[in-house]
Image 1 (tube, rainbow, N blue to C red):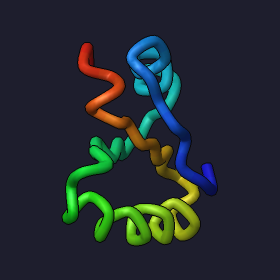
Image 2: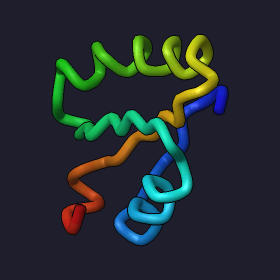
Image 3: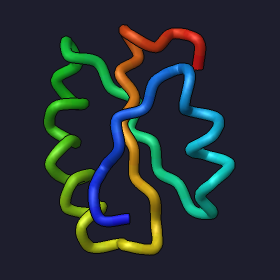
Length: 64
């Protein structure tokens, strides 16, 4: 997978089960360190094609 996928509460479990290696960036719009980490996650997603990268907005998806 070459890019990050935006996850929600409803598709989180399916995404994790369907991919062998997963990195999920749990972030929030108000979180400064989250914004700093975002470009690094995007770069890793481009480089590590054997890993499925995803992002989860924890303010909008509280059930996970």
